[in-house]
Figure (cartoon, rainbow, N blue to C red):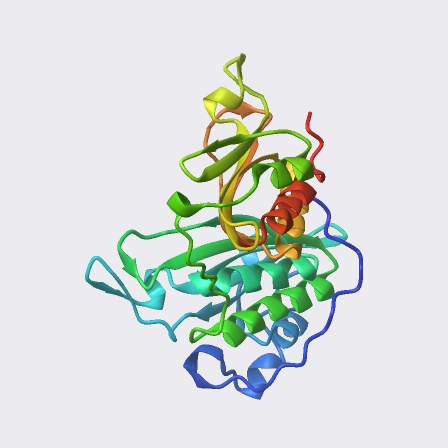
Length: 308
């Protein structure tokens, strides 16, 4: 795991948390269960969440059941114990503390919560589903970080606060009335941003950037799916872009920050292969806006990569 940024993390003023999911009696924030090397009371106070200890592994975990959600999967009512609990676990590693966690989010919460994590020094390491046929759709965002215990706890607290803030349909949902069959966009304007040309077919303009990995000693390149691509449809003033980024592990956080900083929505982070060298991470995205603005956002993320 890469080192967490040393910059001072922004604080957040937390209002009193009400209800079973969020509220904690004041006394529970005074002293957490003892774990060697960790100030569990401070972690509870900074995250605003009561935790539990696993002393044998030196881990202290704070958890928030998403009991505010009413989710059914294939007709089965899902309860927090069936996987709808957000958590973050802290572990002392020498002079530093490591944190790992999994956030339970509805679709409209994913990107605001992701930005809260990235903006406060945490890493986002995966974004995917755990269920089929779930309604509403639930996504799971994994976070991580290493550094100062207090800063990590503050950042985790901000993430949990953003989940609370965006619950109940208060997140981010894009919409655009676009039919690719009626596209009028000018490909040359997109080409000017990327410095290369793509293909315009059936109302969709697509541009591709290849990478290469090896599997069992054999090179796998763009034609085998190891590529970044962007597909545009609509008009110059209002278009949609969707696509896929391929990245080395060390490039993921830079690409995420560039895309989120430009307002592009992240919809998945995962792998497409196993046993490849170097390891390749894939990220899927979605954005709505003027074509040149969307293209510039994708280009800014490409520019953070080493392209080796």
